[in-house]
Image 1: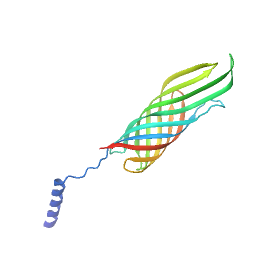
Image 2: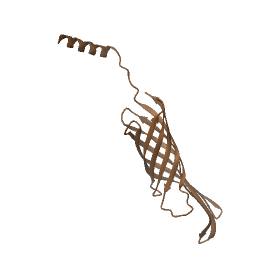
Image 3: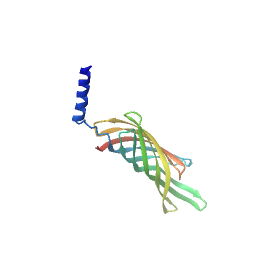
Image 4: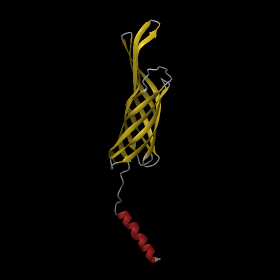
Length: 193
């Protein structure tokens, strides 16, 4: 019994004397996403191109808990249309239009497993429209609210770099339309503390 008390006392004493190694569990990461985007709309034109490019940049603060917070922005192509003989009440003309958006979204993310993460965010979408009808250029910009949700799988290459993929859904309320995108992800730890 006396020996057990001595062993426990030695262990407690050494734990208080020697400093413990602290694990750096907080990090700030940059996530770059590049991929394909599909615009889902009720617009009914045969010549409507709903396929495009999406590129996103996300900066995330990752504490030791499962929930991370950050900010996402980027570029998302929505649609384009080019019709050579468009009939209107004023006559027949060529018609072209396109739209892309720049999202600015606060994002929350949660790791389900070490490699799988769910994310969601809500904020504003800056909508940029350009078109041409009857030889006149038309340009307009709008702001819309909206939200996004996504799931990603990443694989660590080393302590600072991970690669993977993400599928993301977005809803833009001004248009009452959605997008679905599939992106390649590159994640880099800016620093840990």
